[in-house]
Length: 385
Image (cartoon, rainbow, N blue to C red):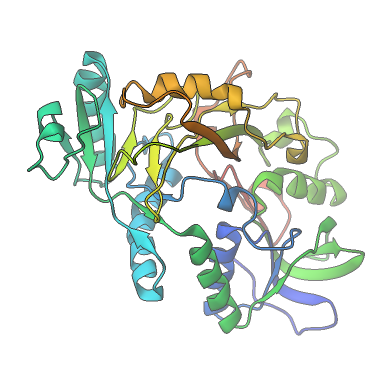
């Protein structure tokens, strides 16, 4: 639990949140509404400029996760979907519950892959999925009509949708500020340490004494938290023992291509079955303006890379070759030359395929509390992709 604040003095705050992406903003909104004094620290010049703005903007139904291996993802996705739709309605945030087809492209996927997804979903409490045939998809009177899709069968998810992520983040920031939270942009946390049951952060040369620190720094969460533990004499180096307390993050780049010079082919999201390398496959996403983009793929970054700023965020147009091959499995009418490199995003992962022994529990979100690392008041969110 977060601890109550002591009487305020100069450069003292009850709760500092490091990172003003969608997670940090959501935490700041929730705590400020409960009466906490909140300071949001963001090193960039605007909110949500990294992972939060470089994704597919999809509201997922909660289909993919095995609740025995990834209980946080299973729980938060299903419950969060309902809360997010209601929040968007209450705050007039643009969204569309457009639905999604998860398509099988061969008999094995149809007979084994699709039923397995339905069972996962039922285990997570998602009971609105429906197995549909190719005939259903080709029927203009069907509620799953998608004449451009080629498949052997599909699962229809009516509760999947899309959201304007930037409007969502602006709304969360506005609510947090309405309830007394303060945001400090262009402020970098240089270091931190534990002292007298507080966490002291150094921010642009100034020290801030914090009763609670919540690290929601996305790609940077592991390094920030590890530095705080190092300065607090809780660890002497990042090794296997300390990774049990603050797991290391690895990086998986996802590239997107946008469709140009061809009529938009779909009215809803089209997904292949999940990619065993760690993603959801090269899927087709429509945005709120009706345009279509494809991706992300999975491009694992070398496990020696520990600084996300060392990653080239440009999309290599040569990767389009694999996109054409993947997309044409369910949309064979995609014309050559109509995929244009768009943008990329980075997923923070707690596992890497190069590792010999992968703990499946590290495929879930990880919330490190004082129980894990011993620093009072420090909470770290890791692997939030």
